[in-house]
Image (tube, rainbow, N blue to C red; front, top):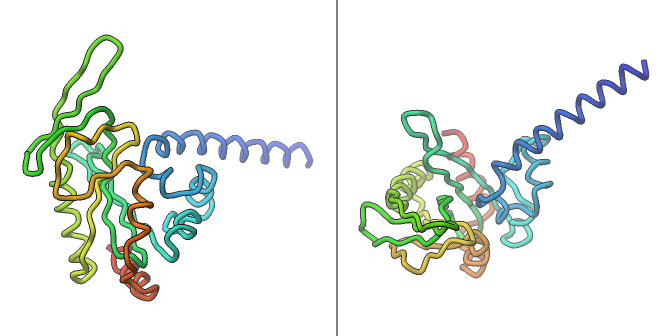
Length: 204
C-alpha cells in the first residue's frame, strides 16, 4: 500500500513539475510578470485555482480589480495578437502585449512598423503590422460588450524594447511601466461596476 501511495505521489509531483516547466515558457518575456507577484502565484492560480482573474500584486497596487484574457489567431491557428483587459477602480484598460524587442519605429497612421534587432553579426530589420490597428479594433469590441464603456488603450512592450522612434495615438509602455502608469489615475469605477463589467465580458 505504501509503495502504491508513494508511486502515485511521485507521478503527481512529476506531472506538476512538468506542467510548471511548460507554463513558464508562456510566462517569461510576456506582460504577465508585471501583473503577478511572481511565477509561483501565476502557476498556483492557473494550475490549482484555475482562475487568473485576480492578482495579489494588482490588489496591493491598484485595489479591487479583475483581469480578462483573449488572443487573436491567424488562419493557421497561430496566436497573432494577445490581449489583457484590466478592470479596476481607475477604469477599463485594454492592453495589447507586443512581444517584439529591439528598436521599434513607426508612425501613428503607418500601416507597418519596423523592428530593428542587433545580432552579433548583423542588424536585422523586419516589418510588422501597426499594432495599434488591432488594438483599436479589439478595444471597440470590448467597449460594445461593456455597453459603451470607454476603454483606455495600451501597447505594452518588453522592457528591453527601444520605443523612442515609435509614434502612436495610444499609450506606449514597457511591461514594468504599466501598473505605475495606471496607479495615479483618478478613480472612476466602483467595485459593483467592475463585477458587472467583468461578468458581461466573461460570458462572451
